[in-house]
Image (cartoon, rainbow, N blue to C red; front, side, top):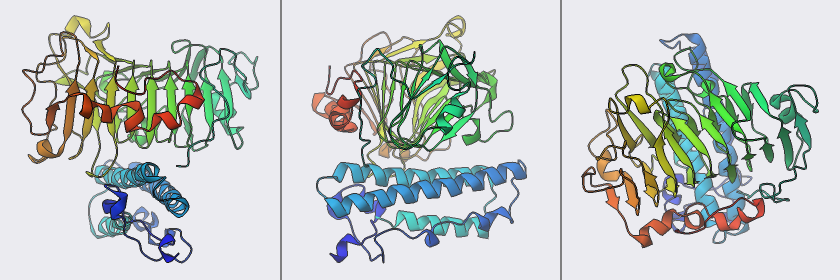
Amino acid sequence: MATLKCIVVLVLAISSLSHVRVGAAEDGTISESRLPDHSLVSSHFVSPAGPQLTRTAVDYCNELMEMSLKRLNQALDLLQKSPSKHKADVQTLLSAALTFQQTCKDALEDHVPLNSYVEEIYKKMDYLSELGSNRWPWDRKLLQSSEIKADAVVAKDGSGNFKTVSEAIEAAGRGRFVIYVKSGTYNEKINTNKDGITLIGDGKYSTIITGGSSVAKGSSLRGSATFTITGDGFIARDIGFENTAGPDGHQAVALTISSDNSVLYRCSIAGYQDTLYALALRQFYRECDIYGTVDFIFGNAAAVFQSCNLVLRRPRSGGAFNAILANGRSDPGQNTGFSVQNCKITVGSDFSPVRDKFNSYLGRPWKPYSRAVVMQSNIDGEISARGWVEWRGAGGNTYKTLYFAEYENMGPGAGTSGRVNWPGFHVIGAPEATKFTVASFIGGNSWLPSTGVTFVAGLH
């Protein structure tokens, strides 16, 4: 059928696949020739912060456009197979493609002056906005077994196959590849696009992958990440990811994930500002400890945090407040957002002595359609009675288009009588809260059981 050789109209399609429009494509794929060419900017711009950051932003955009192309072609493939059967998958892939486009725009705006060349790049990126996953074939219940059947062993003392995590990942071939990382602190910067990587450590505070890059030290946001994974089916268990830049490092990412059907189980993710970059696609966090100050869980994934500890740390010198969630949903049709369920929101030991000097909030709206739900969680008294805080510079309409909600929380910070009175804030009931459970929000019943990770599909 001619309609199977299509380009998906992204902005319309992601809100409802019944509205998908199609256009001819010769081979049923999306042409790279109409995507942005990083060479357009590389020779014409120098960032006010220096040529290196210009180059970094341009390279990142090139990578993001390739990631968008990959997800759009995956969506086309699923539509060819069965549009009705794969509706949720296609919407997820399209949401990711749009997220990558927005991330590229953000990077260019941060580091490249706007002029005719950047405008040309934006025009080419608009092609993606006019476009309108395959689940990983899990083969073992990796997270349930106490016995580790590893394909590679990493040990600093030389008792394994490799001494660094990077070397072990580099050795991975196709299919599921299990890496056992023995106890130790591994100072590495890792960026991989390999599918099926599993990392299993000796404990979230025993096996730690660490780094200290930050924006304050000259890195880009993307470049500050200690560990970046874009390959699908990523699993991590009993391991820590850390950025040690400190509270004065400004943005300093410990972990960046744009891996579909990814699972982090009993992990620690520690940093300060921008600790966890949950960039895109479906993600599940169970029994993890996540530490930070400002926007320390940010991005535009469809992510569920279940039975986790979200720990507020002492902000930087002169910092005004802490905020946990900063979701980057930029389009109302994206099936993305953050769901925090049965978690404990508390303070770290470094924050306790100064807890009265700083306000702390559940989150703030990074983008106009930001979406975050906190439900059935224990909220410490350090969370402000307002609950949520404005994003400086956001237009007034943002507080109408965002979606922030709370359901059946407990603890001294859970009262909703003093919450913000924004049109987009809601105290919801069970029917609405059910939409943000593992089963409904990330389709977890179809892919989590085979991993062996413990999870609750619905409300507690």
